[in-house]
Every structure is written in structure tokens, then in C-alpha cells.
Length: 285
Ligand code: NAP
Image 1 (cartoon, protein in one colour):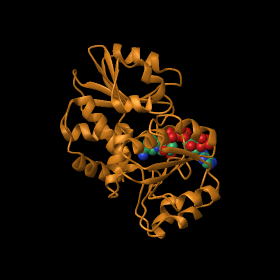
Image 2 (tube, rainbow, N blue to C red):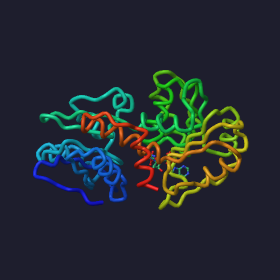
Image 3 (tube, rainbow, N blue to C red):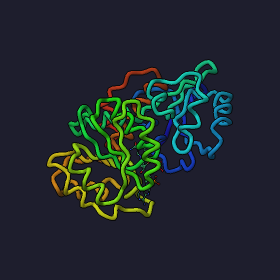
Image 4 (tube, protein in one colour):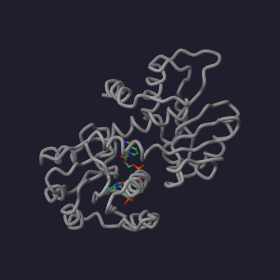
């Protein structure tokens, strides 16, 4: 898309490695244009280990802020002058604002996920959740689910040690690690009110697929299935869940909402979340 620049246009960007596939520039520049704000949002490749150097560059170059994706979210956290409650909960930031030489860290991933769940008419309170994966996204989702009142979250991962390490960070003891084999998934699925896929299985450009989705047949009727993946728009997991009659959603909503909340921090502006999600939905699909 074309962005009009002036001599005083404020700079924002997303950093990551890899990052060139990122939809954040399109999402943020669309929102900035709709709001009539004089900012530009760029895409900046920063190699692993480069977060501290980037922070110096961003301050020097007068950036108003930036988003961070893999592999920088955890590395940036200890470099913040101040961090919000969610960033402290996950010990990771995805949004950094730079004001008068100080850096303020936020994490909007969990809020974005919860807001996207609302579109499925679902809230975490009292729920038993089957959560697949134990990487960076799973960590934010699991801790947010517990913070928002989930009764129990079974964190199922191929590498069980990683699930156990994630669960050890739970202050409320409601996260439980489990394996990723069919027997474990079927057993836990019977007790679940909600399934959330935080693995990269089924993601465009990656080789892995679920070997066995029969655990969906054990899931109680009406339990929603949420896949963090948004490309493709319908993974095999979502296709099977819908075929079995479960409400299901991909990760596009989460992507959009975390960006809306990030832009509110960057620009100190309140944004009509539903209207912006509608606009972005039409741009992104
Ligand atoms: P990550 O840290 O690399 O974690 C990847 C997870 O997938 C790990 O739990 C890994 O298990 C599991 N996995 C990978 N290949 C597997 C296989 N062949 N069999 C079983 N498990 C496998 O990645 P992440 O940052 O958490 O992202 C995970 C997914 O969420 C990605 O698809 C990403 O695009 C998506 N995401 C979406 C949003 C959004 O806004 N919608 C935000 C963040 C992430 P091991 O631990 O055993 O390796």
C-alpha cells in the first residue's frame, strides 16, 4: 500500500528474524491511514541476539516505537525501563514505545487472544482447556487463560519437558503438562471445554501436520476449537472440528486485535476495536 510521508512523519516498525513475511506493516499502515495519523510502519530484520543494539538504533533514529516478533520478545523484556502487567506475566514484550529516551514494554498477545475468543462467544472463566504446544505463543495463551479464570489448562507438547517448564511458571497451579500422543490427547479432550492449537502444525510453509486428529471426536459437543494459525485460513484441524459441528476460528482475529491494542499504545489513541477488526478483515482476506 502507498503511505504519504512528511518531514515529521513518526516511525514505527516490526522487528524479527525472519520478518519479511509479516503482515504487521499492512495491518498498521491500514489502521494509521484510517485514523489519519502521521506515522509510517516499516519492516526491520534484526538478527537473533541483536535486540539491545536495535534498541540503541531505534532511540537514536527517533522511532516512536516498534513491535517485536520471534526471536526478540524475551530478550527485550529485561531491557525495558517499565513493563506492563502482561509483559511481566510472560516476561516478554511484543510492543515497545519510546518516549523521551525511555522504553516502555507491553504485551498485547494475550489480550488479543482473549478478545478473539469473544468472537467465538467464549471466555476462559471456569473452562478446562486442551492447549496444544509449549512455545512462545503457548506461554502467553496459557498464562492469560489462567489469569482470566480458566479452571485447568492441559499443556500438551511433543517435548514434554518444555510443557513442564511452561507450567512451572504458573503462580496458581492450574497448568498441567501432558504428552502429545493420541492416547493422552483423547483422554484429555473428553474433559475439555475448549481446544487451542498453539503448535505450528498445519501452518503454511512448514512441513508438519497432525498425524491423528481423532482426539476431536472425544471432545464434548459444542466445545470451541481455536487455531492460532491464520495461513492457511482453514487448517486441517479447523476443517475437522467444523465437520464435527464445533465452533472454530483461526488466528487472524488474534493477530488483528493484538495489533489494535499495540497501536493504542503507540499513538495514545482509543480505537474502535470492532470497526477496525472489520476493516482489517476486508483487507487481509
Ligand atoms: P514456537 O515457539 O516455535 O513453538 C512451536 C510449537 O509447535 C512447539 O510447541 C513445538 O513443539 C510445536 N511443534 C512444531 N512442530 C511440531 C511437530 N512436528 N509435532 C508436534 N509439535 C510440533 O512457535 P510460536 O511462536 O509459539 O508459534 C506457534 C504458532 O502460533 C505458529 O504457527 C505461529 O504462526 C502462531 N502464532 C499466531 C499468532 C496470532 O496472532 N494469530 C501469534 C503468535 C503465534 P516442541 O516444543 O516439541 O518443538
